[in-house]
Amino acid sequence: MASPPRFVEDYLLYLLARASHVASAGFHARLKERGVAVPVWRVVATLHGAERGETVGALAAACLMQQPTMTKLLDRMAEDGLVKRRREGRQTRILLTRAGERLAGDLIPEARRHEAALLARHAEAAPALKALLRGIVTPSG
Image (tube, rainbow, N blue to C red; front, side, top):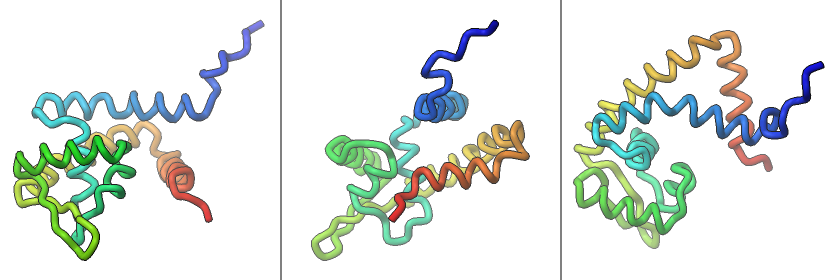
């Protein structure tokens, strides 16, 4: 008689976190080879196509970081010429520079290829899986 699975082996939050870690590992290794830190990738991917940019708070939330940590990262990215700040009334918005757009333009096709290879292994479930995950991450209300 098989023993029941350990708690974490059937715990949704563990499975989501573990799946993200496993699914991201290959792409994160490619980022490292290119000298791009994962948080930098998350920022350029989030800002790509955002014509008005994003606030620091919105970027921190989207990139899974605390706001003070995001601010320090953005300072370094500004020094590296990847982002710029633009004041809009009482808000500061973060935008990609041309260099930041070039970096995003180089990395996004690679990210799409990585995603396509991963989803190809589960093609029948991919649309439902994405819809389910969007439902989880989108606040209800």
